[in-house]
Amino acid sequence: MSMTASEIFEILNKNPAFTLATVEGTNPRVRGMLLYKADERGVVFHTASDKDVCKQIIKNPNVEMCFFDQAQGIQVRVRGTLEKVDDRKFKEEIMNHPSRAFMQGMKAQFPAEEDFYNYLTVFCLKSGMANVWTFQTNLTPKEDIAL
Image 1 (spheres, rainbow, N blue to C red):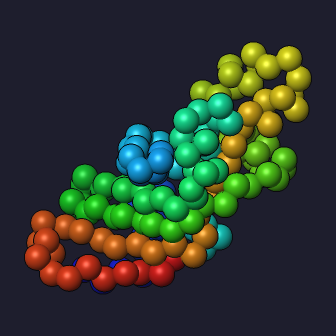
Image 2: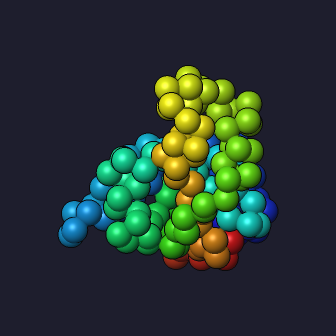
């Protein structure tokens, strides 16, 4: 199934829950995450600085993400190297987005706003590679799509 990067970004944004694979030592680690957004600038999500996933990414930023569009029966796997984003304005954009209203209570628990923004860790995957899987294309060779 051949798709463009724009079509991939559309699927990711419509299906923001994804599975993230990292490595801790020689052991794989997988967990569910929530996408902030995906576009030509990169695939962006966030976590907390004290989480194991954050520590794993900082030690080894090579990851793979798996998104699933159940309505279309399409799985999209995205791989690449994450970069930490330390842009306060971007973090504020994330926090003010309606999809992140659930985080306002967490932010209120910090004694100073700066403490919260240091705790909020944003990652971006730039120049990743994606491939698409469906039951219909299960036996065909994977095609890498540059993002």
